[in-house]
Amino acid sequence: MQQIILLPEYIKQLLHCLDTRGYSGYLVGGCVRDALLGITPEDYDIAAPVPPEVLLGCFPGYKVLQTGVRYGTITVIADGHPVEITSFRREGPYTDGRHPDEVAYTDNLAEDLARRDFTVNAMAYRPDTGLFDPFGGQKDLQRKVLSCVGDAEKRFSEDALRILRAMRFCSTLGFSADAALMQAADMCASLLQKTSAERIFVELVKFICGKYAGSVMHQFAKPLCTVIPELAPAVDFDQKNPHHIYTVYGHIAATVDACPQSKVLRLTMLLHDIAKPYVMTEDENGIRHFRGHQERSAGMARKILTRLACDRKTIEKVCRLILYHDIRPAADRVSVHRYLLQVGYEDALLLVHVRRADLSAQAPAYHFQFSLIDQTEEIIRSLQKEGAPVCVQDLAVNGRDLISLGVPPGPQIGEMLTCLLQSVADGTVENARQALLQKAKQLAGEIIHKEK
Ligand code: ATP
Ligand code: MG
Image (cartoon, rainbow, N blue to C red; front, side):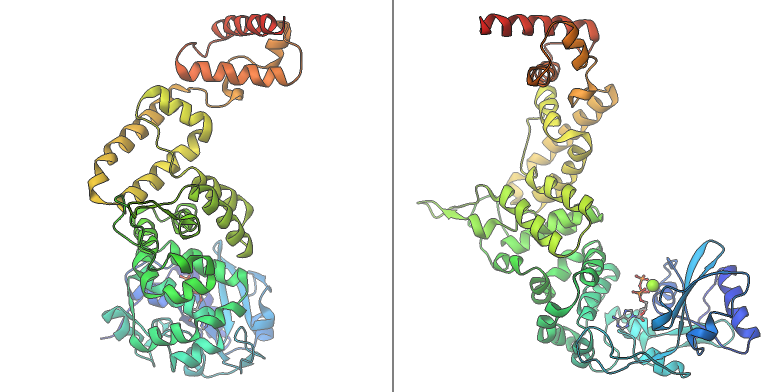
């Protein structure tokens, strides 16, 4: 059946620019795959039988970025969208398992597609000639199967990142890897040690954010544990604890699937219990305990994410969420307000997702606690709506007010503000200027009294 892909006007115009110069450009890779799956492509990649120096001159009137020109790629900004346009390339020899030794150009489309990773990513499309699918990508799309273009082991040996890309596509598209790919992924997993942290992290994040990441974690445990060796002891680690029905790795995978598909939350779940095998103790009844695993997991997460070149902001957030993932305040106003003093609104709302995901992957006997989490969330939201203070800056008084009451400048100011904040959380004083000043006077009196 002839496939028709509807293209945005700005893409048609870029193809037209090439056509007028006598070159046939094709849409290739992810946009063809996604369009055939009925998913609107996030971006469009074009390939053309044109050397990069010539490509540069094919788009007059457009802003052209030359960033990848050494590898045959230019970026044209069309209608505000960056579109990558790449010269047809042939696979050069790989000696380092990371990048081809040289970039070799070709004018043969089939050759360009042959160097691509998976059959579903190795299709090309032009409105006038339709789909070009020399490796059976369309059939694999229909069967929801991911298979390599050519020999899987050879392709993974050339570039081990393709293993992580396979995990990513299985996780995001819900495809299963074919047997040859699966076998080659295990065989070649150790080659990932040579792949750069930056490339790994980009694919790891895409993988972990996929809808099916948890189940893919089971199939691809070996490559994942090559990228994160600290995770290996979790595989098959029996928790021997009434709260748990899964191994540590199984629990982690189930929590990944159960939480929203955001980078911070998914990385948090992936690493939240990673230290459990390292801190385990077993009591006289054979029940295992994991005291301190929150701190240890947060520490390990920091090391792992730093090594993987994760950005600072994400590291800080993930580590905080891991550190606090097991705090379960009672579902009453005072307890939740006190909890908010520790974690703040933003993290408290993220931790609601973390706790739900964590609980869903624990023994069903404890699932009654879902309602406690729901109530906690409701209280957090209503405190937030009221503007209840959760840090000293939110108080209706500040350090200067205390100094004008006669409190000497210095650490006592901070201590007193904290004390006022706690009193507000406990409901013993309102967050109102007069009430707080009165309370402050009383506290100052107590301090002076104590000092005498
Ligand atoms: P998306 O853009 O949705 O993330 P994509 O399939 O377009 O997915 P890209 O990383 O943008 O992924 O790569 C574009 C295309 O380039 C791929 O579809 C594939 O054909 C090819 N490709 C990318 N990386 C590799 C690789 N390491 N080995 C072989 N081919 C690759
Ligand atoms: Mg792409």
